[in-house]
Length: 245
Image 1 (cartoon, rainbow, N blue to C red):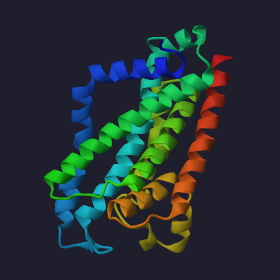
Image 2: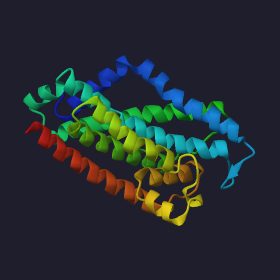
Image 3: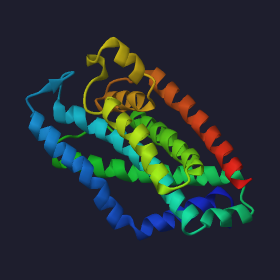
Image 4: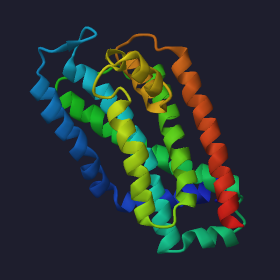
């Protein structure tokens, strides 16, 4: 019998199944452009931290895409709220607020995992094989958890798609380019490093890249992601409470 968060998550999976082929195609476009434009433009002769730029870039794309796809669940929530009035159905159903939050967060994380699989397959086409060990997947889980939780909270606050687009422009897009995805953060001035150190994507990129190279990631990065995710899911729960009042 389907109850609570499983009902919310199952609904999102059904939607995902119907759109799977189109979503996979859309998930591959941006990473493929980055790999061609940056990977080949920078050339395999450029080395960063003992690795080619292509090898450096792909873990960054994994971190960035898992962030953007996890956060994209906010758009699905907004569509269901503004057009289909699904959120009103959940309000009337015997589903707790925390169950709703968990179901939507898991849906966002699922989207992130699909996007990462697409990038890993694209990487094979470019001759790059990453070490997808346990530390790699733990960092990925925490990163997608952080931004899926943020997405659920923000989706409860926005009043239109324009507001959602503004949040993406001011929060997600700058983080995608400044969170250590395309260049090492330690090459920036000291003050900039301190600012970027506050971004969860910086820690996710650092941990995912280290794990994918077979190195031991900094445990501090995992701690920051876990604490940030806990804060964001609590905020999401409060926002859902407020939206249902």
